[in-house]
Each structure stands twice: as structure tokens, then as C-alpha cells.
Length: 512
Ligand code: NAP
Ligand code: MG
Image (tube, rainbow, N blue to C red; front, side, top):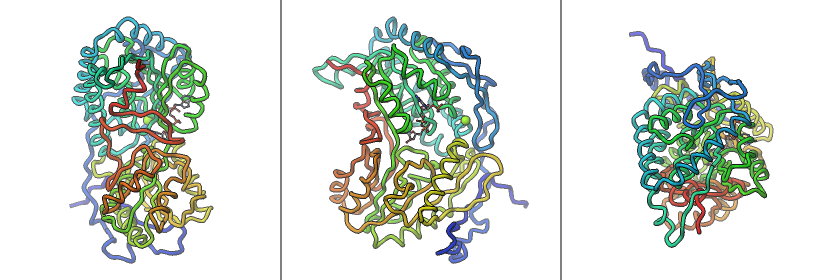
């Protein structure tokens, strides 16, 4: 029987410096896959997805053409095929959307009882659940992430977030006993491309539960699912203007930040843009929360369950192409287990599958955009120039699309750019330490403080280390686990404010 051509590519390990190691498959026959690991294709169907040729802006409950008359292309980063044209909002559109949100706030949403607002949120959550498969496929086509991730992680969390905050809508007085909780007004919300729908849910659900109205700006490269969410809002009969969605580039976001009638800006994105927004809103009435970049450290102690730790490291950085703000992109390994960990890491990345993100067996999908891919290549080259050793899985990459095989650096020092700058890619920097004190000092040696991970067999060590790590979230013996009831946010240049949980209500309320 002829072998069916699989839609992903098997990886093989190479050492790009070409010095220390021959390809691992040559050394160890058990890693010479020779097709043994090739699964038959398992493509998620996408022939039922109805994409419009053109997507308009969503203002005051309706889809309207942008005042600029301009549209930009949305492409599938795995194929470079054009999916649709997306409207580009300018200052006039921003003004229309903010006015619609203000009217909806004054006339409807702020007057509505929490119990009624909650019903809308429950309805939105249920509609998202009903359409979860379709939305997951769209998310994968538009953003390049694997269907495994969008179907099993993003979409369930999106629905869970709306369900969770629906539950708070009529309980705000219990959330903050003895205090009166009032909404702020109109919230401008700007989100990145890595978790398009999930970031929209993180922003919209708490804001709406608290009685605010919203103007949301998705990232340019991942606008489509936000506009499908707009259709869901129409189906849920959410009152006009309560949520407005404006697509466009950075200028659209900037116009939103600078609009005079906004009460609150919530931003998730890079530290660079976050700083610009902080100075633009300084001295205004606008309240601000920033969820910015990260350079998370995973720390493996010699007493850890090493296989479990390696699997957690792999899932924490490679399964999502490294494009999670809290991706564990720095790994500190206790010296005594360093060679063991490195061997297991190499073995494991050689079994990862890179390719068509719609294939259910694919572990590593496409990089979101060419710009992002160029950034990755530049930073990896800097690591090589600065003398670190790169171990990279070499795959036959698809002819079209944006791809980057998973890799890790050893021989990294704290001053190397790969150890300092957010990479946002499947690149890991591995370093060593001797004592817990050294691990803490090195893990904290970064301008960021979003997340971290600790791997050890000793509960007491977990508590000792966790209390000294300057990071908003620290996972112990697991990684990248999310739940709507648990707050998330940064220290230092990773931003301020919390999303999720009861804490996630605070940025959208005035307490008196
Ligand atoms: P980005 O360039 O900062 O963009 C984020 C959003 O801001 C996009 O919608 C972008 O629009 C918009 N934007 C760009 N310039 C702007 C300006 N001058 N004023 C207002 N808005 C502007 O970040 P990204 O590269 O898309 O996303 C990756 C970053 O997000 C990483 O640093 C990652 O760590 C961070 N992130 C943080 C968290 C967290 O919770 N802390 C979560 C996810 C991601 P365009 O797309 O049109 O440029
Ligand atoms: Mg796209």
C-alpha cells in the first residue's frame, strides 16, 4: 500500500555549530526514526468554514465599512494564502465606536442589573461552546497555531472565561464586602496575536460583568476570529454598542489610546508599546492596566522527576511555537543533572512534529507572521555570534509559510541577548546553577517578571523558592496551566494589574 504523505515533517537533530555532536540519530539507533514515527495524516476538516471575502468594522451592533475605505489582507501563515480582507479603522471610526460605547454605557449597560448582564454573558459563553470547533479551526488558519492548542486549550478557556465572569456580574457587592463597586465607563482594549480569542475573552468578560462598555482592537495579523465573535455577540442580542470591534494596525490602537472619552485602557502586548501607552495616558483620567512581555525561568533541581520536568519544559515552550508571553524560554538546570536533562531534551525535540497546524498530530505549527520569523532568526543569529551553542531540530520545512524548527542554546551567559530579550519563539536558553540561592538570583536577573516554573521533589523547597521569585505566576512541577478563577499578571517590566479571578474585576471598577 503506498504510504500516505503526512502533513507534518519529522524532525532530526543537528548541531548548527557543527563541533561537539554528530546528529543524535547516528549515535543512538533508537532515535533513528526511519518512518517508524510517521502517523497517517489526521487533518481537521475546514471545508465548512465560511470566511467572508471582506470583514467590516463592528460598531454599534452592526458591521460597517471603514471611513478610510482601506482594507488589509489577512493571510494564513502556514500557506501564505489570503483568507480575507479586513477593514482598517482610522480616527473617525475610533470616534464613532467610542461614541456608540458611551451611549450604550449611559442608556443601557450601566443601568442594567448585574443579574441581567450576567445572562448575556452566559449566553455568549454557550454560543462560543456551540461554535467551538469552527472557531478553533479559524484560529488555527488565521494565526498558525496548532489545532491541538486552539481546540483543546484556547477555546475551552475562552468559554470558561465568559462563564466565570457571568457568575460575578450579580455578585460584585460580595466580591468587595462593605464597599460600593461601580463601573468605570468605556474601556479601550488592545490585544496581541498569540491568543486572539482568549485575549479578547480576558478583556471583554470582566469589563462587561462589571458594567463597562468596550472598544476592542485585535492584532492586525489575527483579526478574523474577533469578527466572528462579533457575529456571536449579535446572535446573543447583546445591546448595540456594548462591544465594538475595530480592526487595524498600531495606529488604530494609538487612536483608541488617545481618544479623550475613554475611561480605561487595558493593553496586552509588548513592553515597548506598553511603555508608549503608559506615557500617552499619564496625566489623563484614564485608568491603565498593562500585560506585557516575559522571559520566564524554569528551574530544575537535581531531585526533580526529570522526565516529567523535561516534558513540562517542552510543552511550555515548543508546543505553542514559544509564542506565549509566559513561555519558559530560560531553563536553569542544577549542574549534577545537566547532561541528563540535555540528553532528554534533545531526544524529545527530535520526536516533535512540525507542519500543517490543522493536522491533529502536529506539535509545532507556523510562526504567526514573516515579521515575527525575521525577529526570531535575528535573535538566534545573535546567540550564535555571542558564542552560545545551538542544538536545533532540522526539519524539511514546508515550501510555503513561516516556520522555525525548535531549538535550544547551551553555553549561554546572563549577558547574552538570548538570555535577556523576549524571544517569543521555540528557542530555549539552557543554563546551569549549583545552589538554590544562585538559581533564584539568576532567575530574577531579568527586567521581566511574568512567570516562572520550579521542578523539585521537595514541597518545602517549592515554597522557599516560589516566595523569592519575582514573577506574577509560578508553577510548581507543571507549567502553563490556566484557569479563569486564577489571577494572572506581571512584576517589573511585565506590567501591572491582574486578569482572571476576583482580582480581574478590580481594573474595571471604582470602589468607594
Ligand atoms: P505589540 O506589537 O505590542 O502589539 C499588541 C497590540 O498593540 C496589537 O493589537 C498592536 O496592533 C497594537 N499596537 C501596536 N502599536 C501600538 C501603539 N502605538 N498604540 C496602541 N496599540 C498599538 O505586541 P505583539 O508583538 O503583537 O504581541 C506580542 C507581545 O505580547 C509579547 O511581548 C508578549 O509577551 C506580549 N503578551 C503579553 C501577555 C501578558 O499577559 N502579559 C499575553 C500575551 C502576549 P498591530 O497588531 O496592528 O501591530
Ligand atoms: Mg492571519
